Length: 93
Image (cartoon, rainbow, N blue to C red; front, side, top):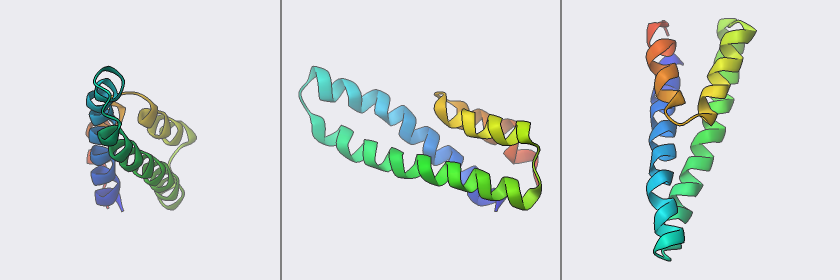
């Protein structure tokens, strides 16, 4: 479970960063297609990350603080990278 959460945290973080590339393409160069696909992937990864955080939190009896911080990490650029490095990496599966 934790391995999957770590991988999903990294993928969600990458998709968030890619939005920083595709948004200027959409609005400054009139190229909406890359943003459409990256946005769709990011949305799916975001929902998956949040669902997996809640699932793991229930299964592993996480504290409310750790659960809320892990969820909040998905809203901050580079936040899921931090969560993976600071919390998830230290956990056992």
